[in-house]
Image (cartoon, rainbow, N blue to C red; front, side, top):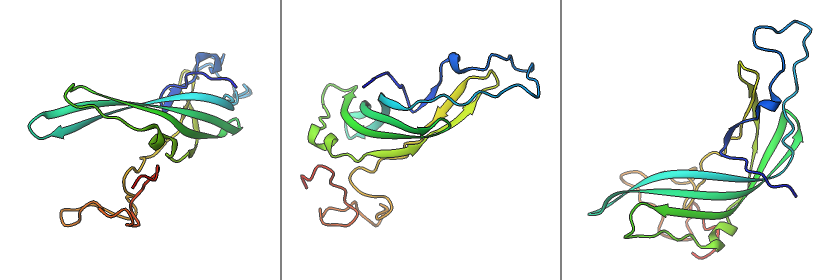
Length: 168
């Protein structure tokens, strides 16, 4: 199994995938190279920065690194990224509080499968995007929309409640 750093969700492929024909010098019969084949197993690191307003303490910044086991399959140009979270490590800028995410929670986060979209820059380099979309944690947005009049579900049996690790 090969593991490489995939980087963030949006990554520019190495110039090795770039066309050897300089921009503007393309001829009508010039072959357009195929998108790179990213098939295989990868490590993907996702960094999320969030800000929490805490009464009295003020605003704190939290940097969360999530490590995923990622697999890409399909034909070049029509590939799918499959991700499974392996580790979640949040770090706060305030030493007064520490966020701990139990491994059991991470182990029960759902797998995501997203199509990869390939495009080329004017310089000929390949880029791809795999949009992971928001991850619902706690409740499902499609089943519950918090408003001024509606509170976040308190009952674990509420149909909108997500309980990935099963601890209630």
